[in-house]
Length: 212
Image (cartoon, rainbow, N blue to C red; front, side, top):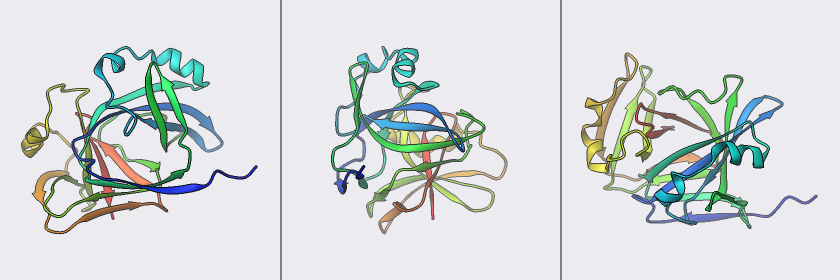
């Protein structure tokens, strides 16, 4: 069978846009993985539909071990350049249309929800932050920098971007980690078109990706 043709899509004015994700956890030859579906460009993840998602029913219908709702979330990146099939794989989850966006490698440990736990994601995309944008970063003890790609309102429904300026006062990362906010003078690109993205979340489920 011929593989579907791939096209590159450039999504602009992404920052501040609301979306939600669905993880369909399945078993593979190398352990567990999750197919990641995303509402972005299809809808803004309406609260009334999100709150009524039947995760057990979704998992059963999809032949998955589990279905995990990830969100609602708000983008902090300005532009996304993404390689994908010409015709996106779109599913209807309880009235929420979502397109398949990535694959999350869970290995043998499963979907560990612990904060500051690094995961690898195959997403074939470049996330860009424009010059002049404000970014929010975690730095690990070995000086690896993770930039926040989206904030989440699952834990704190009232969380807004201005709150991220002082978020470090609320976080309790492992020893040696630090949080900072800064305005960048030059564009910042997180290139994961040919390599997996390395992502993690903090206690509020805000998501960060490793900057090379």
